Every structure is written in structure tokens, then in C-alpha cells.
Image (cartoon, rainbow, N blue to C red; front, side):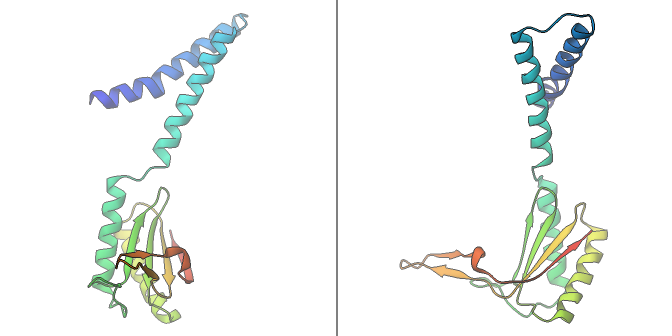
Length: 166
């Protein structure tokens, strides 16, 4: 409670009070000094920083939603491809600031992609608070090192289709 109150005071109430004070002084004919201009610029910067951090972050709720969507999708649709090196369907979900991203591997035909999209449209209405963007990929690409370590190479994967579900 105390950290939230402190954030509200520092990033919202304080800068608004400074801006109101500066506007009132200016309307009364007092020209601002350099120090006052710096304080007003700092207030505007703090409000912009607060707006940026609150709109460009993902929350735990977003991560839970995408995990629930992936779980429901794997239960409702029989995926033809298993994830490499794991015993699960080749489906991944990521929470982004403005959307929930789902990567589906191995669903190549348009008819099967349409079935997946229909399932995701239903899940969007039931679960998701943000739009869902589904990326249909041909196959996972992994690079294996000499020591046996493995790393996914997402930039080398082939995108077949991208669908945004509002």
C-alpha cells in the first residue's frame, strides 16, 4: 500500500501540482525563471515516464491468460507436431504489452489453420482481455552446440501466416 501511494504521489500528484502552480504564476504575469522551467520539465518527464511504464509492461494476469489459452488450445485441437525436445504440442504463448502472441508449429494447411483460428476466437471471448495474434510457423529451428547445448533460432523460422483476433 505504501509503495503504491508513493508512486501516485511522485509520478502523478506531484507533477500535476507543479504544473498547476506554474500555469497560475504564468497567468498572473510572472515569467518563469530557468529553475522553474527545469522543475516543470522534470514534472512533465515524470508523468511521461509513468505513462510509458504502465502502458508498455505485461502483467502477471497477461502471463496467466496466455498460459490458460495455450492449455485450452492444446486440449481442444489435436496438434500434428510435438515440440522438439519436449513431450507437448508445438505451441507457445507469449504476453506482449498490447497483445497475446501464440506460435503454432506444424499446422500447414489453410483448413487446419482455420480450425485453430476458430478455437482461438472462442477462447478470446472467454478468456483473453487483449487481442490474440497467432503465428503459424512451418517448423521449429534449433541450433545444437558442440557441447550438446541447444538454443532455439526463432529468427530463422519460416512464417506461414499471421492472424490477429480482436
